[in-house]
Image (cartoon, rainbow, N blue to C red):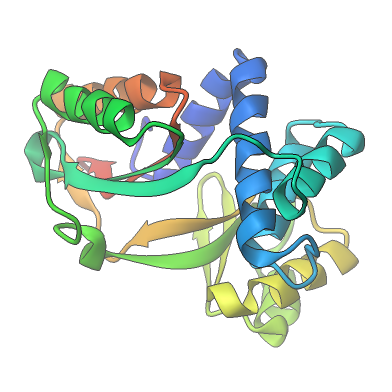
Length: 239
């Protein structure tokens, strides 16, 4: 999360995740399974499943592993009854945070997430306390591609916005348009370092270096919890 971009944070998290790929694989498999259970096993008709599969492929997950996770989701093989829970709260400097979980034990997860907020000087809030500050989008971060090329491809396919960062070019699409946009990028053989459905903050909150470091540590803590799938926030470094 160093620097002034949320994408720098994603890169920071991805580098950390690469070092513990086994844990990441487990979380991706759970996400694929629940996505298939809720939306069906066809990735061409299920944006969440498509995004989960793409994430698995970006981590070099074997196709057989992905297929087994889909079968568990749509069939009766999955005996682990996972529940989706989204927690909302505030981190240092009033930064809004959303913690998305998949769990088979609601009490354990609530206790662990609450501890994470408290440990780093934040507060776990009620449902909806920060959710209104975010919107859900299909988001891709593309590198080694010209912005003009993405305008021709992504916008024609239904993307809502294209934003240039130091880390690459970001493509955003509404969830209902994400499959068409991602298909257009794939057809054009445009590689995406990140391609997922995620909560995007309406506005970023600039925080000092000390609080930014604390937020990074807070994200690391949540990432280490088996039940936590994703952490979103609206922090950025001060200019």
